[in-house]
Image 1: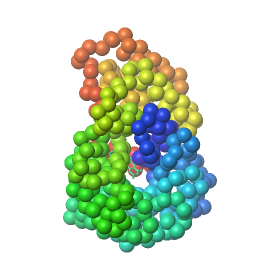
Image 2 (image 1 turned 30 degrees about the vertical axis):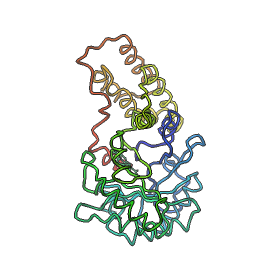
Image 3 (image 1 turned 90 degrees about the vertical axis):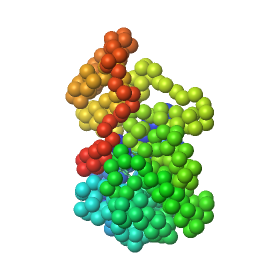
Image 4 (image 1 turned 60 degrees about the horizontal axis):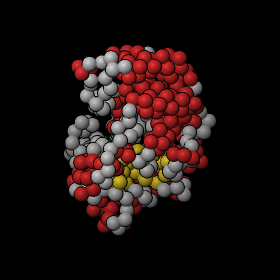
Length: 342
Ligand SMILES: Cc1cc2nc3c(=O)[nH]c(=O)nc-3n(C[C@H](O)[C@H](O)[C@H](O)COP(=O)(O)O)c2cc1C
């Protein structure tokens, strides 16, 4: 997820456990000369052994540039290289990238072919069910991708104009799975995405959609325990509720990792959003909202976190302060905002 799934975030998810494959933020296919040399590419692709296997993602539309980017990602340490055919932001639509590629199955085929020829790493596609409801052509796109070398299909089970809050279409996943089974056999992996953040959604993606795996985006922000808790729920094990001390410990570890990646100055700013997510839903968080948004350096971070958790432990908040647990953030517009920034 652009703006979120950097190495710090991914490592936290892996350390808490339950998450099998992590994915980078998308990397724009801007031209070979620019890869590997700029700071942005370093931040987007930095990775560590402990998080492996790691998928990195190409965002673009020119086969040659996407192939060059695939090579750069391969060299940077990607284990899987994915093509973004789902990003719905204005910039993507204007430039024929992201979800716009859903309108051009043949171009998708050309890009995947070029990427597959450029790297020995598995190439995959992340797509939607169509550019919009009138053009629900996911089978055509998945087929073009797979016939040209894609080795797995990730399906965000909505069309391009659907908001995040809208229901996911499990029958769309089923249609893709059936078509890929006919093309490559039942072992061919089709991964379901889109609000796969409850045991119920995962059961439905498996039972109704025939999905082979489940990809979680927004719900993991601030709730890295989600992966193992979903597995626990699905296997009738008790779920795990981190206490305040553990939330704080992980938040501080995340802060250190983010500062390592970006340096203290930028890292502190980047950390603001995560800090808020970690504390969102906890008693008293609303009173700290402004302070979380203004953290400017390491000492300010620790001061606010200290105050927040000390108040929490001292039980200084009444029932009326208890916000709804894990209403993490307005899931509607974040993708647009962040990807526009990216
Ligand atoms: C802030 C934000 C950034 C995203 N960036 C990417 C991205 O870089 N690549 C991608 O394939 N999807 C991206 N997505 C889409 C998610 O991966 C996912 O498909 C979508 O949010 C639905 O899944 P979810 O309900 O689990 O979040 C982004 C979503 C959000 C909210």
